[in-house]
Image (cartoon, rainbow, N blue to C red; front, side, top):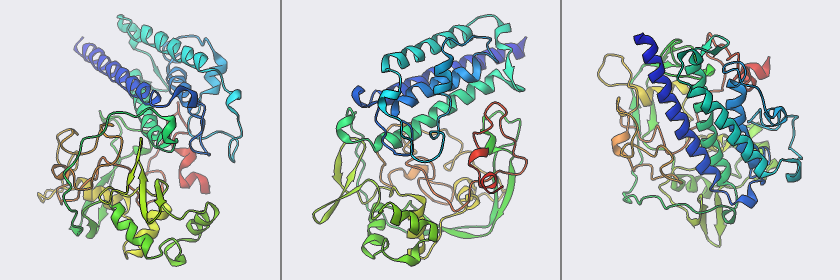
Length: 409
C-alpha cells in the first residue's frame, strides 16, 4: 500500500512538471508573431509550425496506444509531426508553407492530445497507472515526455534567436548586472576521477546516452576560470583568425569557406564597431558575455591562443570534482543545493547571456565559473556511446543515429 501511494504521489508530481513544461513551450511559441510561424529560421531545420505539432505528437505517440490504450484520432498528423530533429531525406528541405496544415488545425490537434492524455492520466483508479512500455514504467515515460519537451524549448530558443527581430514580440528585459571587470586566468585542476554517466536503476532520470556510469582518471590539467568572452574572441578576429589557415582543421576550413563565415553568427559590423543581435534587439557588442560560436570556430580560437578545448572528462572533473581529498563528487559545481537565480543563468530567466563573472556563488570547488547555465559549452570529445550503451527501444534513434560510432560503422 505504501509503495503504491508513493508511486501515485510521484506521478502527480510528474504531471505537475508536465503542465509546467507545457506552459514553457506555449510561452516560447507565443514569442513569434503568428504570421511568421511558417518561417524557417535555420535552413537545415523544419519550419516553426512543425515544432508546434511535434512536441505534442511525441507525447501522444509515446503514450496513447501502447501505454494508455487510447485510439488515434488523426493518424496523418501523428506521422507528419513524429520526428523532430531534421527533415528526412537529406539535403536542404524544399517544402513550402502551403504544404503544412493551418495553424488552427495544428492547435486543435494539440488541444485534443492534451485533453485525451490528461483525462486518462487523471483517472483516480490505480489500475490505470500500471501500464508501461518495453519494460519501462509509466513514470519513466512521463520523464521522457517532460525532458523531450524542455530540450526542444532550449533548442527552439536558439532557432528563434535567428528569426529576424521584427518577427518576434519583445519580452521583458533581463536584470542588469554589475559591470565588474573580468580578469582572466587559468586554474590548475588536480588529477582525479570523473564519473561519467548515470548508474542504471538510479532514481534520477537519464537519456539512453547517459548510461552506464563509469569512472575515468583525469591527469592534472589547467582550464580557464571563465568562459571565453566576446572581448577575447574579438582579439582573435583582429589577429586574422578567420584568414589564417593553420588555426583550422581541413573540414572546418572547408565549412567556413563554403558558407563564407567571417565572424560569429550574431555579430554585425556597423562602420567601425561590432553590434550583437540579441533575442529582441541589437546593441553594441557586450565584451563580457560568453562568445556564441560553432565548434569549428571554438577549436580555431583555442589553437590561436595555444590551448585546446577540454575533453568531456576534463570538463566534468572541473565542474563536479571536490577538494576534500575523499574523491567524492558534487551534485552541482557549487555543491548540492539546486540551481537558483543567485547561482547562475538558469531556467530561461534571461533571454540573453549574462557576464561570465556574474555569479561568483555558482563556481565549482576549484573556482571555475559558469560551468552550468549561461550557454552550451564545447568539448573536444566526439559523441559516441558509453560502454554498455543500450538504445531506448521506444525511441531507438534518439542517440544511435547521431553517434560517431554509428556513423562510421
